[in-house]
Image 1 (cartoon, rainbow, N blue to C red):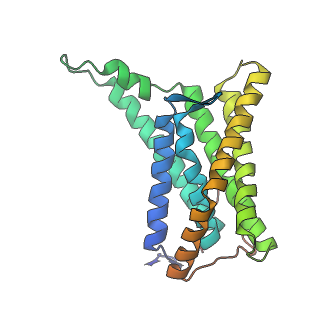
Image 2 (cartoon, rainbow, N blue to C red; image 1 turned 135 degrees about the horizontal axis):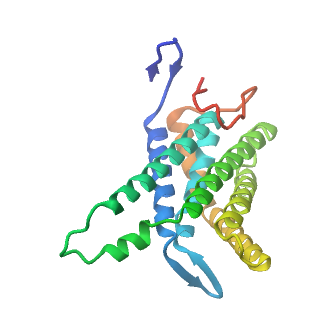
Length: 233
């Protein structure tokens, strides 16, 4: 717990801190894993799909236990940390390579992200995650905290849809419309199925964290402005 200079009391628990850290790690790792392409049956996917949905699951957990305001803070923290990694990676790329090191091409392949891809990824992440948190929060209030499974699935579909609608048109501008739509639908379906499969784990974690924290926030009369990062009261 921390008393701010203006008299407000803001508390951050160990569970919240750990979830926020894991959220940031999942986001940064998923962007690095995007450079790996793999085939699942007849579907081609990027490596990021293995871990990125975890960030949405964590988002659901944070909203469910601590509310939309804390989720909003974590989302923007993730955005800032991802930007920091991207920026420092470009600075490292500019450093002169040692003459005996032959990994330059591999390093550049992972970290030489096109500005358009980076912009698409960051905008899509903030927008999709914010929508996911908003839907989860509003549905919790409307359902009086019931039907967590339905809320988690619907919020994921909403968030992933917004994420895909922003990311793919920007990142793959010029791609034939049919192929782009196929990519978008594949991402939404796969990530939603991921959420459904892991729901038993998510529900168990939420129940335990609620019990440990003694928290079960309902967001009544709050601002859903995604840019009010400092509003934690």
